[in-house]
Length: 259
Image 1: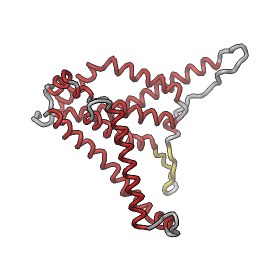
Image 2 (image 1 turned 180 degrees about the horizontal axis):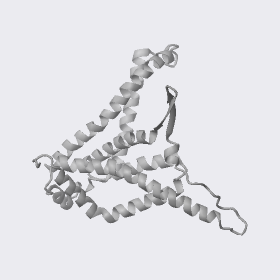
Image 3 (image 1 turned 30 degrees about the vertical axis):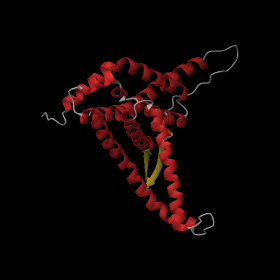
Image 4 (image 1 turned 180 degrees about the vertical axis):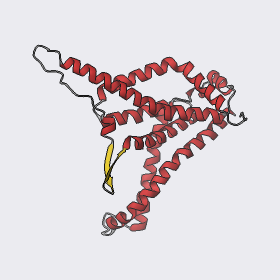
């Protein structure tokens, strides 16, 4: 059923337009990611960092065309609502990006291990430059936390917890790509640093006002321990509410940009 506000067929056409115009760029980008994973395949922190930082750049440039006079006019003349355009942007920069990163990691891991073991079987004038390494999936196994409930072992993969952080980062940088006219990724990154700096100062001042000089307060650690669990729950709720908040702000900003 078609409506004037949202129609899945129009969203599908937006996907077609995106991949038709950027298929060559997408192929190059994900090929590079697979090559990078070939070298980082056994270093989990670097791989996680690559996924998050790469996602920031990917989302930070998504709506860059709306800031160009010629491309911006053409973009806003596309017969689709701003909600549909933003929905396509969210799906591409968050869910599509995360899925493609996992695929790039799998391909890079397979190729990297394959070529490493081939080179390990070659004798370089008696020098053992390469060593045989079995196929490992460290992005998955090193991100696993094993815990027991009622004598039953459960594997919880933090990789999917990382996806929550990734979606939050993507939502922030997607807003930045709409809000800033140029250098969207850099300006968004600097805005995040400034925001956290201000929040840190406010938190320190608030703690000092409530609890006095916490460097000399013997009850500080005890009080913080008691507040830790409640703060953790509140912070997690706030953390996940930020994602739809930035999406809503992005929608209104995109609508204003059209005007």
